[in-house]
Length: 119
Image 1 (cartoon, one colour):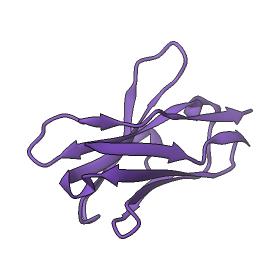
Image 2 (image 1 turned 90 degrees about the vertical axis):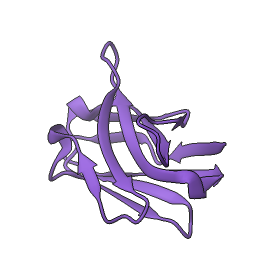
Image 3 (image 1 turned 90 degrees about the horizontal axis):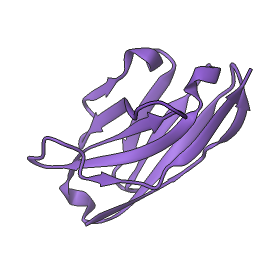
């Protein structure tokens, strides 16, 4: 089992920045990929960004390219999402996720952290 706890959400003005953190515990060595999803009110959950175990490979959604950066510190068992130039449409609950080796889907989800961007 892997337990994920997000932090760092809050209220920020458009154009501002926030950094989300996701602390992992449990069998973290089994996590091949970690990432972030988000869900805005009335919308479906969507992929935001992901990073491989080594940190050498990342992927992010077109809507956040050039503004958001994902990184991980395996020694601290933490994944980060640096969000710059935030827009009101980035308002959502952000979820940390983890995929174990050999899995085609994300196996573990955090409880989520609210990000609100005011115009």
